[in-house]
Image 1 (cartoon, rainbow, N blue to C red):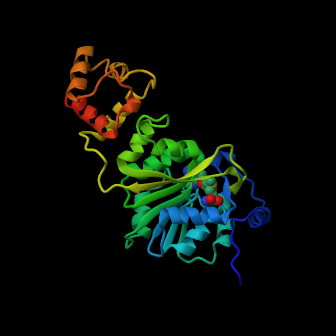
Image 2 (cartoon, rainbow, N blue to C red):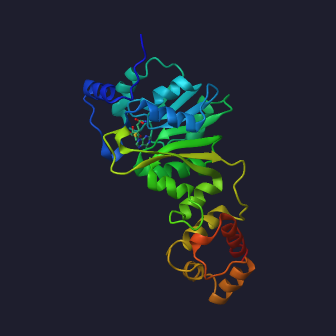
Length: 290
Ligand code: SAM
């Protein structure tokens, strides 16, 4: 029998009709109906027959099917139990695949990865993420320091641009720094709305995050570093001196803040958006020491 991909408008409609499935907007359900886009995602991820893949949100299985065909093994997390009979049908031919019906934000991903992928050396995350929880999902995967080499995800274009942004650009902010502290971030491709059913209201992009062996910069305390970065961008148009004075109002006098800015070699009249990640690390380390 010839292979008929799930990711076509006809096949997707046929599956939805067969099971009377209705999309839940609140779960970010926009399914891909273009096989070429799926191939591009898999290529951008660098998936091979040696790769063990973690997918988040298989939907009716469009990407999952391609991952099962091109990788060694797949675990997929899906929150919507209504998809169980559909996935049992659409993906029945793939023995290298397990679906975990859990909210990925609540799941013990590390334990599940250890159980399913105990002997795997090349573990990657590949997903078309639900856009309403993109940042929490990515931050969870990064903060938990999972043994994954990369994350390749379809997300809202604007969020992808922010995550991959460099200093002195409009998109650069605390999210760019949080992501680039752990990974090397690149936008692999932009994707038109027409490849989804139903079409989302926003444009999309495929973001590739390659995990660093060690974080990009050395910081005395990670939580303090991330808090200071957020404070520096609290009011984007204000100077660093202003934003820090507000944030440290109860800890340091204005004069003490000046001394520390000087010690870090950073001009307080600059704006947060002009600082490199290394400069933020220098600043955080000087303020952390008291
Ligand atoms: N992978 C499919 C595709 O590309 O056609 C579907 C992608 S759709 C954008 C997002 C999927 O994530 C939906 O199936 C949705 O039910 C699921 N989802 C939403 N929130 C989730 C969560 N917190 N944990 C796991 N899956 C979730």
